[in-house]
Amino acid sequence: MKVIRAGRLIDGIGAAVQRDRALFVEDGQIVAIEAAGEPPADAEVIDLSGLSVMPGLIDCHVHLVFSRSAFALGDVLAEDDQQLLLRGVGAAREALSAGVTTVRDLGGRGGVTFKLRDAIAAGLIAGPRVLAAGSPITITGGHCHFLGLEADDEAAVRAAARLQLKSGANCLKIMSTGGRMTPGTNPQVAQYSVAELRAAVEEAQRANKTLAAHGLGTPGIRNATAAGVNTIEHCNWLGSDGNVDFDESVAAQMAKQETAVVPTLVPLQRAAPSLRMQVIAAQRRMVTLGVPVAAGTDAGVSLVRFDTLPDELAIYVAELGLTPLQAIHAATGAAARALGLDSTLGTLVPGRAADMLAVDGDPSIRIEDVRSVRMVIKGGRVVARDGVVL
Ligand SMILES: [Zn+2]
Image (cartoon, rainbow, N blue to C red; front, side):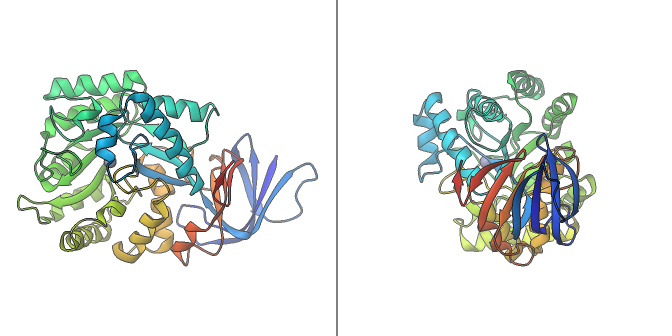
């Protein structure tokens, strides 16, 4: 039995901060939460009574095998799978050091992210829990085709989804539009019809997994919403002229069916300021309409490190209009819900994994305090202290 004393407790559900609580942990799970008092004599006590304790962060959009250098595309094209695996080992440590205890990987190659996931789960290397899509499904020559999974019609999409699931994917990803990273693709137009996306949704559901759709342009976002995907990545609402063409009825439908948006605003900081402002305005409107926000960074793409989730949350507060508690919810309870993991993690309540981080200050008031990580605990074990992964 471990007892973790929390000076302030943020539960990840969105409730008000609780003071001076004790979390009882057994076999990596929270079994009870009580007012802090005299701990049982045989308990191992982790005293975080001077700190704020919150659920371990969930980054809903990373690429563990991308280099995050200025030449991320060139790196992944040039490197073999063994090099990608080593990239992933470093990326996993970097994420964990920032309090990220779960990531959803939305694009690897050759099954490398499955091996990474399994090595972390087996305790061979340090890192967050990994939900891995493997290779994303894309059209021939489409966005991220170099990750090796091209499919051009409904039957081929179905086969590609089944192949990833057979290979060990515990979520799926499909490219509903082109992407900025892949030369020759068009982010403004749809890559797939509703029926083709629906085939991927059905295959994910058959395996009780979730499906993420990359979507930059409005036609792709519209199709992905109609198909019923679980999350839409980036959601930049690009129209045919490259400016934002926001469709309020599609956003309202996302809210109604609980399709979450994963905004990935850290990389958008390098976009043209006028476009960035338009995207932010559209996403603010999505928040107002009640579209669930699940936090994600696109870590691994050019100049986006794996420890930048706190920066992403700060942007949600500064620009999307979320309160600090709502931003924390987007990276904890709401993220777990969007990924279908909410019965096992994402909140600090009995019956959930003892994944948490302790920070200086009070991030429920000042979101930037999420950066002041003093301790990271995963499955009840201390895995990082003061930014150093143990
Ligand atoms: Zn991505």
